Length: 93
Image (cartoon, rainbow, N blue to C red):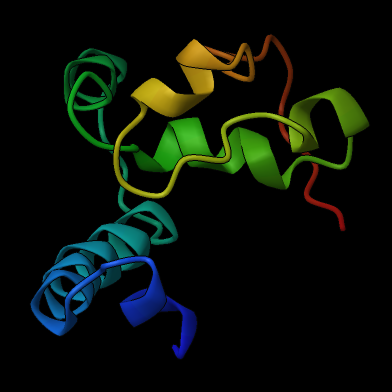
């Protein structure tokens, strides 16, 4: 927290980010079932549950993907986006 003011990040920006981050993280860690169509529509704007679940896979290549918290664009920009898997995801560490 001490670094933020040194970087010029205001308290309002930190609070605003937290107010957006928390509900999105709760949503993409939830067990909400969305149809594939709605999931793909949603992930154009925010990280969807199905997109984020890939990140929790026990397969290293999948675990090392889909890191984004709010906006899905970062994974695409940095080549870490996996759209879908063709197998049932087994969760791991």
